[in-house]
Amino acid sequence: MVRPRTFDETAVLDAAAAEFRVHGYADTSTEQLCEAAGVKRSSLYNTFTSKDELFVRALEHYVETTGAAQTEVLEDVDLDGMARLRGALNLILEEEVAAAHDGHAAGCMVVGSRMTPNLEERDERVGRILDRSLDRQVSTLSHAVGVGQRDGSVRSGVSTRDAALLVVSIISGIRVLAQAGSRPEELRRVATLGLDALRP
Image 1 (tube, helix red, strand yellow):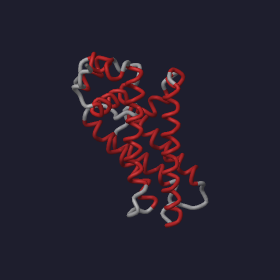
Image 2 (cartoon, helix red, strand yellow):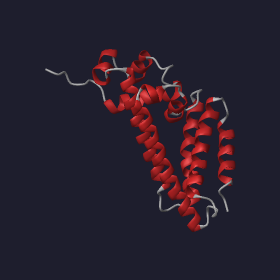
Image 3 (tube, one colour):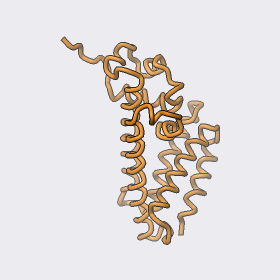
Image 4 (tube, rainbow, N blue to C red):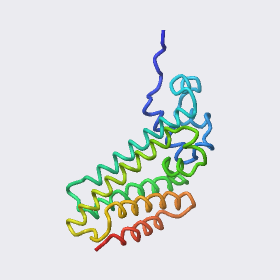
């Protein structure tokens, strides 16, 4: 007879993602994951079988959750195009402000995974998840840029995809700068300067 799980799987994935995004794959131990999730090692492995499997599942959960939050802002019909872009960046900046109060950077599983040598080769699912996430992000950002070009809040004459990739670069740069110790107010100034390139 199979014993019922004694924990909430979504809560475990949230906790695991929080650890992986701050410490990275290699520097996150099974002990850290169990402590963060509040579960025993045996329970963790009964559900996820290995640290690798938990990482992949947590990464899927992370990109879906963060992607949904960004999409909600980027498709908000009550906002002009530039306000949508600014709102997407504010999601990142607010996370970094909250994390700074706890004495660390928020981290990012996407940036961390891209920068970890051999991680995508170790499990091809990681590459597929990251590529799918980037495609979704660029698509929703491109749409918001197009809205802004039509309503006059984003300058015309620039490819919507190029503008979207610029915003992706700003987001990734903010994450890296936060890990390097930049203060939230510096990150906000960098984000503003980056968006200035897209203003009419």
